[in-house]
Length: 149
Image (tube, rainbow, N blue to C red; front, side, top):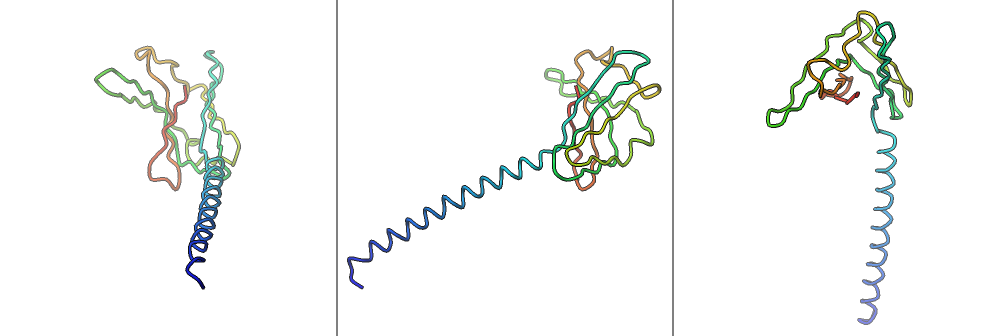
């Protein structure tokens, strides 16, 4: 091997390494996009009739490709005040249906509120409060807080 062939070998090895790096980076980006698409989590939606005899609903939609197990959930009002911070007021609506909800992949589950489980929407003493749902899920140490309305 002559001395003149050594720079060509390093050039070709650098070219192959660069192409491998670009290919590996592209595959990593595609894998991340696939993971992000399949593991989005939970979305909330609500339907309020405003009628005293009607039924109000909060819908939980599983956007991921795996089932989600919810041990129980709580509703709470969050009110943010300037320089004071955030105050959280829980709404105590507990029944036997609140335990062990299963959200199937890419499906929607409704939480109905009627008769004794109705609550004031919006609360009269807190006009700027926003409704949140706190989900206690199986397999997560930290509970998930989602804005409902």
